[in-house]
Amino acid sequence: MSTTNPVSGMPTSSTAQNNAIWVRETRFGRWFLSTQTWYRYVLSQAIIDFKALLGERLPVQARILDAGCGQGLAFGLLEQHFQPAAITGIDIDAEQVKKAVNAANQLATPTSAVHINASGQTFGAESFDLILCHQLLHHTSQQRETLQEFHRLLRPGGILLVGESCRSFINSAPVRLLFRHPEMAQKDAQGYIDLVRTSGFVFSDADIQTSRPWWSRRCLGMAQKLGIGLDNTEPTEILIVATKPH
Image (tube, rainbow, N blue to C red):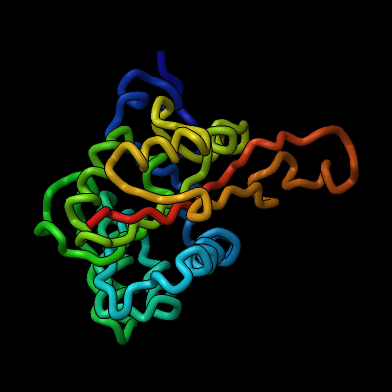
């Protein structure tokens, strides 16, 4: 049996949702992904952290794929921090891609946005030097197929940047109320590590960063700051810098 969420107008639970290839974000979620809070505390910080994890491995003049680009808010950050030769954004949500096209047109770097499913074979093999997969996998039940496609798209030695919110955060009450995700697709940090590694990518412990940022904690971390009760210590966010072997 399914019920309807008043925020999204979408079913809150059903077999179709649990098994969906992709569950579209709620209206609230789509709005939130356009806010400065998302841009500053989540997206910008992820790009900065990825760059730090990459160190000297950052490809020069890379061909970058932003998979699950949404509105294209990462395009300018990728241009600023990675100085690529070209950026291609893809997203399954046609409405968001229209906004991403507008964002692409604002850049000096050749940038485009395409409406496709990340697991579909649209580009030629070894088309990219670096793929950004930020907050995409927990939106799809085709996680392994998506990573296998990224493996095909990367040149040997190419780099995959995976940034994910973990199951402990996605399954929290506020997130379940305001956002939508395929229920059976959610993983903890170790689950994402295993998924990326068994999809043919290599990385060491030094290439992994887990965290519990304030915005992902219960009561935004205020209870812990005030010493009221105990907060869960399980990671809510994970970043992985993975490489396609030569």
